[in-house]
Image (cartoon, rainbow, N blue to C red):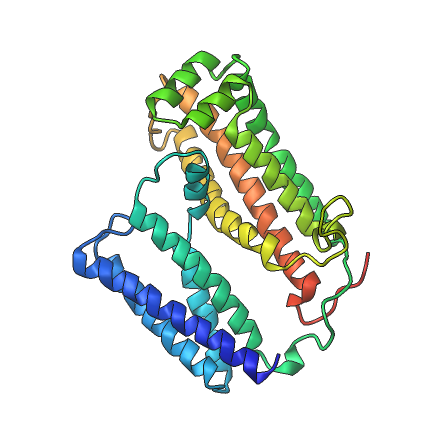
Length: 324
């Protein structure tokens, strides 16, 4: 990557940092809470200013590994800040309102920053550390990664079965399809969501199918070149196209699922009591929660593994991959 590209990426990071700092400063001065804490706006402003400084240094071509590490640390903070963005995206897709507009905006800004910081951190690596070749030929992921993809796909199966049972009017965990539909209405689900449910098509099942499609696109060669049945057949798939939703999904689902499993383990062992929410009994709540937590954790971990493999096989690693 030439000096012109370094300057461009550095300026993009600096611009994002100024915008991110401005958002945090606005929240701090107005007392707007982020993640239910008013003081987090000032933290966001600090991270934004640090990113602006790092972007300015990158744009000026400042040498040194310290800049790469600063960019990576800031990228990690942005990834953490974008946690649960996927849940907001799903909510908006079905015409429902997010719990907090400032939180949703913050997560979207953080996700954009994570992508910019990651790309710039890689660009700042010395040329000797990066592959001297162009983008490698389409290749399959290693067998271990494909095994993880199978595990992530199968982890969704109990969740899909549970949702379809309700969508078709059956009962699961002592709750009937009609009762579940009534809860959707009570919780203010959109007309699209309710219409799908009445036709036996649960919205989250459709999203799970899209998620599995994304997962396998990350581990198979057809995820790197548009298939023949698409208008763009034969053209290379832009790396950001699958990696962006994969990053958002992994950052959201891995902590959500793993923390959930830890919490449910404590509840199941009697250490603490589970929050029943809309469920009639703790047993119902546990049964449904275990299905969801295992699905999200299994798929999220598989997505993270597959995304890392895709990144490396498409030129993100130091060594060009072999075609399988």
